[in-house]
Length: 473
Image 1 (cartoon, rainbow, N blue to C red):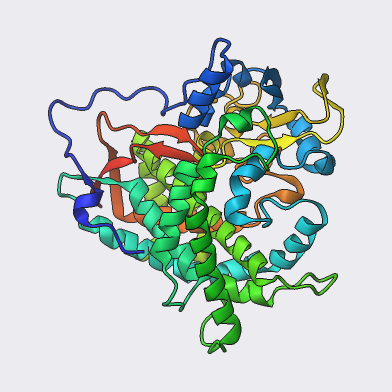
Image 2: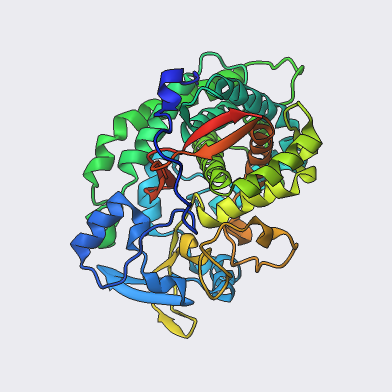
């Protein structure tokens, strides 16, 4: 993916009077404090899904209601353990989630259920072993170097850069290089544009979703996307078939496509077909750059929001790295940088809301759950629930300083249980490498009046970008 031109990443220079005193808390989503009807809920959900969350979800373990169909929002860690781990078969992915994602990523790991999910997970798990993730670290280091070079053109000029755009560029470079290394015929920019358009337009919830209509009822916006999705899949299929027929030189570590082609279910020896490989690769491309780009964008916003934290992290990064970029061996030596990443994932989780459909009757927090009810896991509300977190809306990386202090099911940026994100280790390594490298080389300052707005369509994005002044250090 080509780097954005300087004019595209620059913003207006800060000018005028000195910056006013900063607000006590970083930006938040406005929540619902009164009952809404279906039409207002739909129009708001299409604009920003998180704005339909009730304020009471920040202070209760469960909130229930009916908007077209019955729903329950669960913020109780023991109950979440039950849903995500102990009774996972009784709470499959919701119909809405499948309707939104299946046209683009088919029956891949993220969507599949039951035996079809199990065998794919077994086949793909070795791909994301710690050894393979560490072998891919040089690609992340190189992307950090390239991001630094682009920011160096802006640093000290008095102009601002959109760090969200920069992080999207950097993380897409990583995921495309570790997925399709050496495949020059693969149009990476076209894939990126198609994925971005799908998320922005097609992934919006519809009135048919609100009422819980089945998948076979057409959603007009998703029908309109069919041509773009077909082209994207055909391009990926051609690349996979070309790779199958080629002999790799063995002079470089295998990339994700090599590893998936070689992967097999250890129980059945089954290997993925081309459509199965393609759907999973497209899943990894979306998850592998979108979520990490968002994590880094919000982390940089928070560093600019809290200069004292940024300075401490810079001192740590410079002590470990000197003048070089970070690599896999440095990740464990950068605990504060890691805590900043963890806290960014708490305050602004990329997958800020999950949903399940109850398959059987159950009781959660003493509440009746009927078969067919939608069970929502509002991770944004869970991560800010006053019953679980002290100063829940504050940016406080130190809350992650003590290992084991946080309930495993109170903090779910990557989910939990058997379906925990298979690429979590990859994402954390990449985020720490890039953030540490940038903090060691640049100082980031907020631009007055340019705070990002947290908006969720499919992921929690900073609407308006993350505009920061960049200075060399």
